Length: 184
Image 1 (cartoon, rainbow, N blue to C red):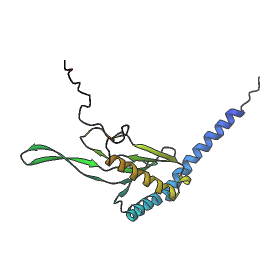
Image 2 (image 1 turned 90 degrees about the horizontal axis):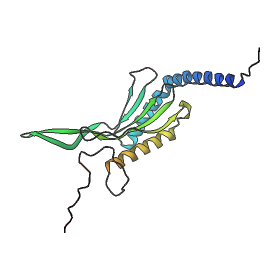
Image 3 (image 1 turned 180 degrees about the horizontal axis):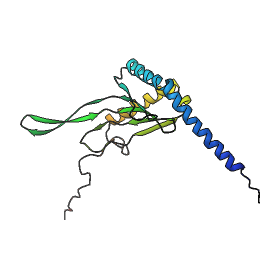
Image 4 (image 1 turned 45 degrees about the vertical axis):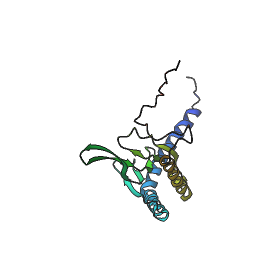
């Protein structure tokens, strides 16, 4: 029988087993304190800066938990007249910063842009980065919050000064250019 060189296959199997062990360790790190540290840090930074955000943990699925720093919902200031003195307000979600535990125990950081219900479609979330638990240090959280506040500020301050700047939703108006008739 021919001898087969299995060195490459053995290296791949070892790498696979190492990654499986990392997943177990990352999940353990999350449960044994990282989750609580993130919650406490976000609450403290929100309070210290006057951001006024709430922080909550979404734990519907084990090992797929998320920590959500949310600016909540509010009236958008826009409403539909539905009758005499009756108005249907359009609700605005003010955006959120999310730390989502992935299937492999790593943590994905996302920004959910503000959106107004019934006024176009929300922009897809922006992925900031994916981290191993040991990589998340306090300066990263400060940077994430700075980026989050910058993104929602840009959303709120949308105008046409920058021609390629995209708004987080599509307008309900037809933007096709109307052709002027030629004058003879």
